[in-house]
Length: 327
View 1 (spheres, helix red, strand yellow):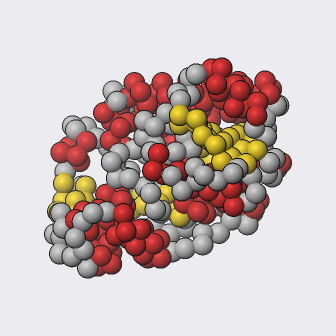
View 2: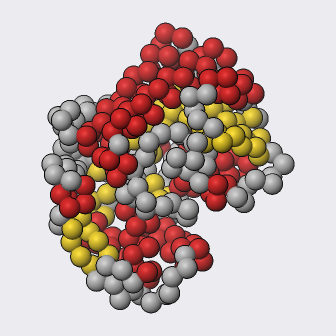
View 3: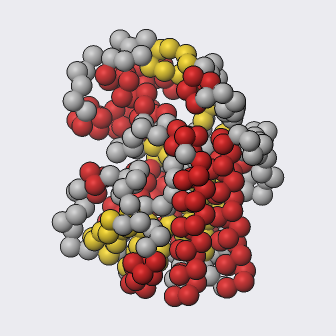
């Protein structure tokens, strides 16, 4: 598999995946409509001899089919992302996630091209488990709360992938990504680490939603990209769902305090009620930690960095690329 197509390749994770694929010897083509991605994310790749890009909607069927025909393997990352976008525009979230995935799977099956589909830890919903396992039940809230439309759309994506594997013999792998962080991630759509880092470096209040006791695990984007490539190249992964993330967790308040300390920021930490951040009726998840046994057993996956090391790299990158005073 020498030619890779990355949908959503100008996004945060997509651009890192494209970079990792190039370093691994692939020729890489991306497609992105730049709705949440950015030209700046791929500016360092644009002159690479094995890199090409198309800025177009995923629903341009002739373009999509031709790109899939040219590829040996497809990584489907294009999706609506971020809590803010999901709450503000549920119609776009549902249509983007389901329609584009259906089209990609249809064309990959027609052309017999292996495809990796990115899903999310959001599909576990309100499941109350110490760790989330791929075989656990999925527990969502009511349809009247748009908070859950993203998870529901991704669950449909997973069902579609499983159906194409079982009925059409399509080599497909699904990865459920937990919080993924690294350079070039934006806080514009609600991602917590870049938002807190920007606030700390800018001298703005560091805003923690709720009481800050909700905990998350944070995985390094380089580890995630490497895992995707290794999984799609492993035939035993076809038809399977895998958690990808980190084995440690941290309360968000402690995360904010760590970022404040590492940036040597004078910014105060302020608590913001969920209703003020996302609107009335928003539901958050107290804990979200992946069970990584399945991916560890198949490809020997292990996180390469702990959270302090990740934050050091993100803060250093942000200092270089933000026009803000360092406090």
